[in-house]
Image (cartoon, rainbow, N blue to C red; front, side, top):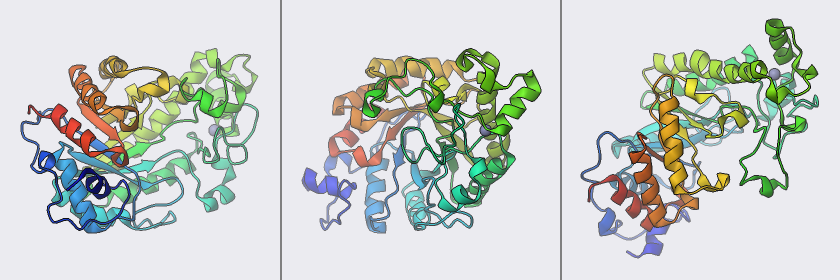
Length: 377
Ligand SMILES: [Zn+2]
């Protein structure tokens, strides 16, 4: 088998495979000598095109490279890819891959978008559920940066109920191991420095069009506690109480709304989180998670592999409830050897493992490099 065929197998093109011997020798056996104290994860973007047989082979590759758990994207803020009763359903993809992944010995944690909501019926029927910026503009009409930045307001019980329904449905799927929250935050008030040029903007401070949420409920609740309408603050970014109020709103959803639902079913709760957490109002060091995956995508921050270690170390130490930290690595930003180095740096910095973003960017060389790093081979 050549590398081109291998690339096809693991999903770079999604085409089928006829070869009998489908795994190169270097990845044909189970990874031996893997450190039992570490756990490796991989995010898998929605992919309904591959056949069950292809998934069987892909999962074997992942398992043999040292992956323990997969994070398939089963809700993208528009459509669900499981048999949801309250969201529009694309295809029941989760139901297809779940038994195959379990047979391969992988844990399965359902990756769902949390705060953005692009379900047309919800946007039309409940525009008041959505965040409003400091200029008074709703994200349904003027979303920041990109058209899908329609975020729900974290202060509203109706929103907690809506998100809770999705998490409840997932928690009832018996074979599933956990629920993985993505976009569990506000819109970025400041984008990572390496991403600003992409949007042709300079964010040297908090600007009002990116600053949320100034809806009636948020302003009213803050005023009740402090006597201050946040809209009247000269410099909201420097008001500690207003910032903390917003961190607490998201923390409440994680710890008090969603965690009990997931844990009642005996499943795990994990989340994809930001190293620059203040910029997205996401104080995840205070979250009661079974695993946190900080997206340590160094290039977005004009940083290198050593920064991944430094961040991992600080984040492990900052966890109020001792959540295990799995360094999120952007595979597309790393060379083959860099990937190995990033894994080793994360291990050496106290991380509980790594999470790869994403399966579609993994090549034969990268899986090999992953296997080398996680085993004592
Ligand atoms: Zn609000």
